[in-house]
Length: 336
Image (cartoon, rainbow, N blue to C red; front, side):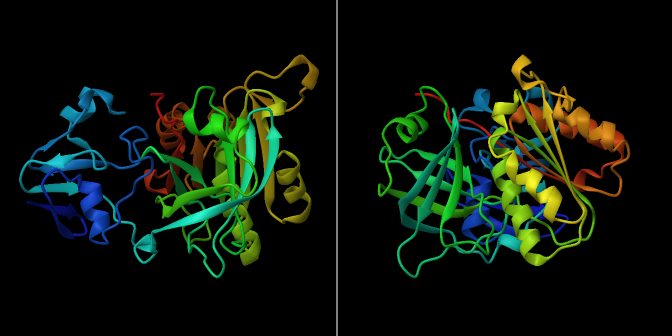
């Protein structure tokens, strides 16, 4: 058994043999920032101040040797070799939320686009999951694997859980969703999970999303609508072509009904048929063209890892405090 101490909070907890730092922390109600839990997204990256850690499969981590040598540690995969001290932020807002495993019935399905399916799940009667806008759930598959999807509904609208599922050709679960799954099918879920959620503040928010990264942003924006929030909001949605903006009509509706809301879709490879007159290129570059000084903003970024990494490098150069960048990096499960 090893002891982990977190700085600067001074919190500590015990880690059992062959247990990761993150698993031990969550087991003892110490919530560290995390996302994919597979060592790929970098959300749980922390600093190793004292001691040593090991990894079951260091070659598969989403972190390079230089970062490891500099003292970076991925708490979701790291196992301590004796007592360690790490530098990490705790996320107290989610510590009191109960993670539950429940059956869920597929109530409704709607194909948003050729490769994105909307799925609405219904929990057993009188059951609800308490969550913060932006968090995700896991689908527990029969073979023991899991698949993670952000909840796209606001916490106030919890009669059904809304998911936006992108089809990954050859993907075990997404092939099932697009080819075999039907309404009334039964799934098993675990929720709520993650540390991507709305922070209480009055700072203007820039949302930068790619693909189905729109789902957690939708949850947060609709939660702010329920709160009748006056925070200025600007959604940048990056996609290849206009057809990939699978719910484009919804943010356009928000621009008409929600004071202080702006919407900027950004296409990297618009089709000729799109006759596109809007922003083109990379979505993170569109953000800084509009906001060359991000010092007074919060940024919520959700989508593919390259987009997140680009934002983490570029936005601090434009004044963004790194503590005000909240991100959810969408990793696809590896094919077996």
